[in-house]
Amino acid sequence: MNSLHSFLVTSHIVVGAAALVLFWIPVLAKKGSRLHVGAGKAYATAMYVVSITAFFASVIVLADPIGIRRPGAILDPEVAEQLATRFRISSLFLLMLSVLVFSSVHHGLMALRERTSPGILKTPWHRGMIVALGVLGITVGIIGVRNEAILLMIFGGISMFGAFGMFRETLPDRLDAKERLVAHLGGLIGSGIGAYTAFFAFGGSRFLAELLPGQWQVVSWIIAPVIGTIAINRLSRRYQKPKTAAVKAAPVSQG
Image (cartoon, rainbow, N blue to C red; front, side, top):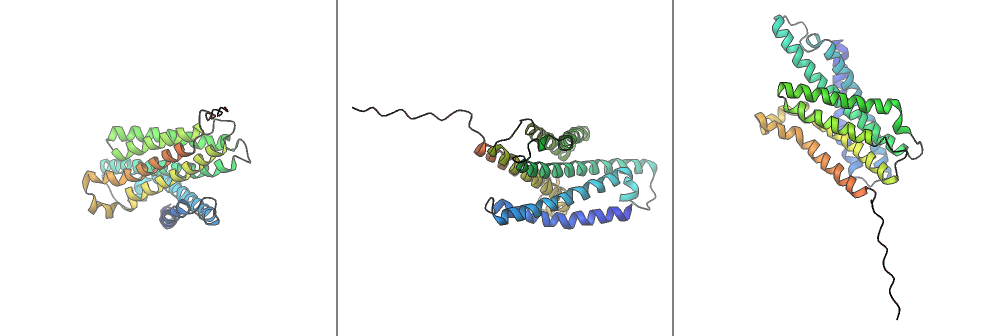
């Protein structure tokens, strides 16, 4: 299991690094262009790999936290229990992020296919994945409150909010063109939030510790979701369907 876990983690890191760069190409490229479509597909594929490897690596640690994280160590039972709890909490957090990333990418891609495949957002698989994300968000948020862990509270809430938003987009019989675009952009940007969050909270934590020591590291944890949420809200307002009909101009009187 240790060898499998090491393989999953290594694959996760290598592909994740590429995904962090790929994310910006479709964002900056002209929408609908060959570069946007090609880079978007490459990014989505990379994020699927990143989320799947993170999911199974997290499951392995949840099943055997000490054996994976402290292989061969001889520990006092009380210390072992404390470490196991800590490792399981961090792995549950990563598992939640992996589901957030996977469901966001899948939702964003399926939203585009909804035009030619009505009901594709309503499948039990897709809705079940979104519900699972919401349940994980609630669970991680509660653990965060109990342990006074700000990171868990923040991203437990983000996962709940994201799950609610995606599930709401599965309710209409059909999405119109603007709604599909908002769902697509929101899903892909949401996956980027999860990817950069994981990087800042884990991969880049050592580097950022020198720039943002102590409690200031919270800034690095929330910067990605803050920027991403603002971007999603602005896009939603920009593309949302007008709720009132345009007022017709009054005819000019002749005389």
